[in-house]
Structure formats: structure tokens, C-alpha cells
Length: 306
Ligand code: NAD
Image 1 (cartoon, rainbow, N blue to C red):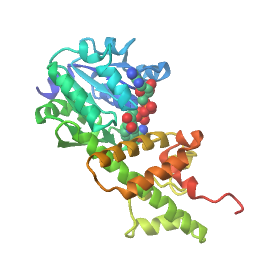
Image 2 (image 1 turned 90 degrees about the vertical axis):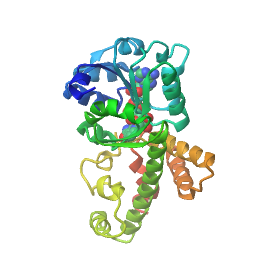
Image 3 (image 1 turned 90 degrees about the horizontal axis):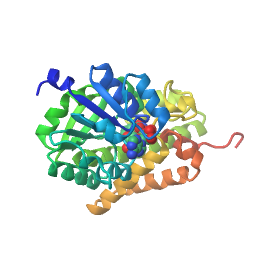
């Protein structure tokens, strides 16, 4: 099937939050017809304002859809949506393409994909990296798990939302790649925050220290693209009191998935375990749980006057 034919197909998009909303909007911008649904009325309104067609519920959204894309907060929501008592797989037509983009466990992804396969539905896991900025810019990285033919069919849809499309391996592999990446992200964010704080505690300007470290062997994505110290970079969560972005709650979910995966494969992940502990400490306060994950900087900052 070529791109032109696929663009004439109908896409159903379910889950229009911080990530799903801008992803659906990019599909509309690229010429796809998108019918959208979210449990939250304000989120659905936002998507409709950006050109999506409103659906009253998930079943109505997938009616006559050729491609279904979902972007939900966690595995329970994905399982309920597809495998629940009134799950979508029961009414989804054979031949539909299902692209599941939420970050969930590899096992949940495999179960949904296997159940879809039994009904003649081509399905794959395709979690993303890049955050809300990349979702808005259409430059996400997709980590796909599933058959090559499924990925080929999904390619034009993924191209409309992302810049890097990777085939990680069979069903569930996208999720494994995603949690390896996010475990590393948590570790270098915490390392960056503690190094910056030690420099500041010793009289350095965090901006100067960041310039030095990014040109030296300590350079990493958290330091260069998502600096956690307020005042160093514009347009990052640290520049707006850590509002928006990727929440501590979602990072804790991903670190939980990473620890489950490590336990199942008997892998040693001491730094991942410590990162999870530190995020648990930070996220013990419900206010912090809703902040962007770079707010871990506050765990190391000293109260004023100390
Ligand atoms: P979010 O909480 O902003 O959005 C999730 C949306 O799903 C909400 O609007 C919610 O109302 C909706 N929803 C939940 N259950 C639903 C259902 N049954 N039917 C319809 N809608 C439903 O979360 P987000 O930040 O957009 O993240 C979504 C997924 O992407 C998560 O799995 C997250 O781990 C992953 N992710 C997030 C980021 C990020 O920077 N925010 C980056 C990469 C991956």
C-alpha cells in the first residue's frame, strides 16, 4: 500500500493528553482524517480545535477506521481499552492496523498484539521518545516491536509524527528498548542534578559549569537539551517551575517497569534501582509527582540561607 492510498484511510486516535494531542494534530496537518476520543472532555475539545473529528466514545472512534493509534497513561488503561469486557478488539474489523504508542510493560504489549493477531488485526507496540516538544514538532523517535510487514504498513503514519523510526525486534521489543532508554535517562538526569548542585555549592555559576561539562566528558542529553538547573536554559521545564513535560509520576512508572524487567531477566541494575529510590523519595510529595522529572534538582538544592 503506498502513502497516497494510506492517507485516504481513516485514523482513530485514542488518548489525547500531553503527547497524544500534538501527535493527533500532526496527523491532521499531514492530511490524514483523524477521529479522536479521550475520557477527558477538555483534552478532546483541544484536539477538535486542532482539526480532529470528535467521537463520543472509543467504539465510535474506531468505527470504519483503517488505522487505530492509542497513547494512554499506563498498561491497565491499554488492557482495559483493548482486552476488557467491552474491549475494542471485539468490534475492530480484521485488516485494521493497530499502533499502540503508550509506555507499558512488554508483556502487556505482547498480550494485546497476540489477541489482535487472532482476530486478523495487524498490531505493534511503538512507544516514543523525545517528550512533548518532539510530539509537537513531529520529531519523535518510535521504537517498534512487531513484524516487518506491520511496520512497513505503519511507516507513513509514523513518519507524520516522528523523525526516527526504529524496528527493535518482535512484539514487545519496542517497550524493552523504551524502558532501557528511560532507566538511563533517569540515571543521567540525577547525575547531572547532583553535579550541578555541587558546583553551585562551591561558588560556580550553573550556566558556566554547564558549558564546561557539555564540552567535556560529562556531556549528556539531560545537561545539553533538558538542563534541570533553573536559569541555565530557556524553554525547558526548569525555566517554568518544572510545569508540563514528563512528570515524576510517569518516570516512576517507567522505572517500575524497568525493575520488573530486570527481575524477570535476572539483570543487575543497581543504578536503575537507586534512581527509582531517589524518584520515590522526591515523588513522596504529591506536588512533586505532578512536576517534570527534571525537578529532581530540588532534592539536592539547599534551602535559601543555608
Ligand atoms: P497524559 O496523562 O497527559 O495523557 C493520557 C491521556 O489518556 C489523558 O488525556 C487521559 O484522559 C486519556 N485516557 C486515559 N484512559 C483513557 C481511555 N480509556 N480512553 C480514552 N482516553 C483515555 O499522558 P502523556 O504525557 O500524554 O503520556 C502518554 C503515554 O506516553 C504514557 O504511557 C507515557 O509514559 C508516554 N510518554 C510520555 C512522554 C512525555 O514526555 N509526557 C514521553 C514519552 C512517552
